[in-house]
Image 1 (cartoon, rainbow, N blue to C red):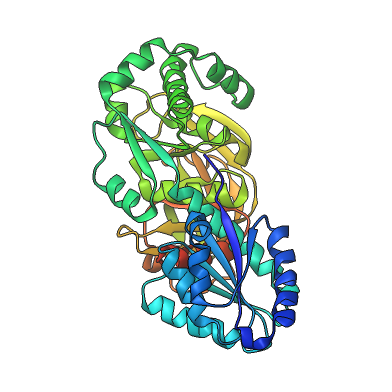
Image 2 (cartoon, rainbow, N blue to C red):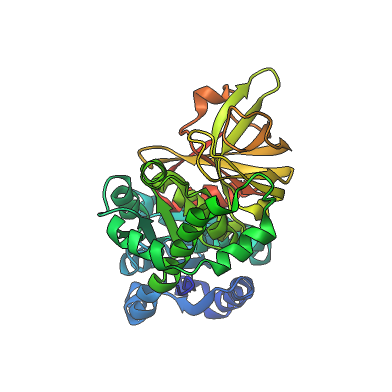
Length: 417
């Protein structure tokens, strides 16, 4: 998949003098180039916008440096030409730049455009926030270009259609009959090597690993042959039909840099994709299992995780079914961003947590378990009152600023835990 094409352009009013705004533009170009953003030049009138229309339309997102006042009409003309593209406005503290950027932002939002505004007194002071915006924009643009493969499905429907419509990615299916043929003939040597290198197999029977390894190998085969960057499957019908779980497949794909979401959960898939794009590391999909209000901790659990998120991994019988095999990972302690997407895909919730303990504390829950404690909590309500979903994704580090910008540009309402 090609990387997102980000384009920077300056806008100015000619009455402010070319020498002044060209000097400012050079400063903004220094910032944008350092972040991997190509630049076009300075546009001073709506008529000039049309001359540059092909390059503006060819960009996946635009970073518009508002160099002077009196330029909001030019910004709006650019937005019209590049209809539907994410727009990042960059303003500074002189020559009415900020006022003009605010004028453009308010009008564009009223017209349905998705805009994010960054302001600092001088262009050089904008670099940190601009870097956060670049990461967020790249993540949502590449999400929109993604191809998702759903295994063991005859058609794209329900939540898959809804998510594809909102976020822009494509979904392809592998029907059960095709999956059966692939499972019979696939080469499992790569997966077998992965399993031996990453897992404690003391609790696993070798003959029961064949099915889970075959499914993992088929999933990777589909990724390579179809050019996909994400895979999902409706787990429980598959377990009932085949007698083994997709949990190993999920861990394998995630460790190999492919997004993989359990239970055909497309909301979780979106957030796992953002996790990969924002941090370069896989996220962890988990269910809240117990909330303790006395110390504000939450026990999370799920039957799969990327082994790269932890210091120890083992294969154990699946929690609900006892089938082979669930993945137990002892997650690394530290700070994570916990996030969830509401069922209507209109609210993106997130908050900062610390993993304070991880292990299989009890057999009565899914096999990867972790206790997290909320830090820098913005909403003091108990977790059961503010949670927007069952599945939550843990993303390594603090990516709240990136998620806030992503929510804004995706038209979602951010909710701070």
